[in-house]
Image (cartoon, rainbow, N blue to C red):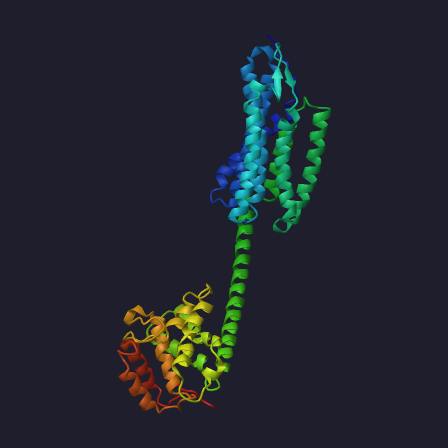
Length: 444
């Protein structure tokens, strides 16, 4: 029994060898896959398979009574399924050019796969519902109410989603991509309309898609080009991040310095105290072999160790005589106030440590928590020595600068009680090298 084809399949048959050659090339050459490479390869493979299935479906459908209706249903459903997946593959190819946060990507995944699930549901239940297509007793293919929405609608919808995303994020794509997209969407839309209205027996859909894949490959997707694009993108992002980090670090340092000066300004006798404590703490940490990052962190802690004095009355801070018990309790609160101010800052880990515990003593008789020994964070133990040293070598409302020899003896005497013995020993060695007594408040 002779069979005549009811569809013109020659355009789609003609591009199948091209699809095969291109996909073989992608397997052979796309070995070090980028996200864009991987998405494009998936897109190309789905189009090739869809093209082959579309041709086979046209042949099977033309067979009419030569094959059972179950075979007709199988091929036509498979054909429409791969048409939907072609559009979905295009969407994810478009997404591959743009970095999306996890929440946005999750929402888009849900939207796309819900649409695909609806498409699959309508197609897989069609043999029972007959909503999309049916066959009469002679095996003739009959379009039903949902044929156009399912066979054409879902693939077009996915291509529209991808196109709209590219247009709304056009700054992420090359201008040539945007121009090619607009032109392609226009041409494909016109051809789809012509096919649906006048030439529904001409297979042209996947011919157009295959040509589109080839154009994308020749103009954009060669492995060398993609590698270059990715490398340039990484370099640009690296430069931007580096510049942002430098600007951020510079801004942070300026802000910390401004805060330190604001605190010192409250006390008429402690001009430059915070900066000197930060410098002394950094010297001690450097002598102890700390890393550059740790040195920067402890310097920042030293700068802001007295930030809590912002919450203490100036009258108490600048009082000439001895403080009352209540006044001293108010002064001691500056450690907790400083902790509350700084603990929410995440840029410098442990920034609040120096503020809360720089008045703790190694013997446990300090404040605010009365912790002892190595319970006190090391950074706070370092700042404690630096803070006390500056208090002894600077003019205060309650004292005058003390001679270097006397300060040295005091640090040794308080080693093991007020100060960590190891840290005190390190600082004494620094003092011994300071033969000109430069490490002190200077008015010149």
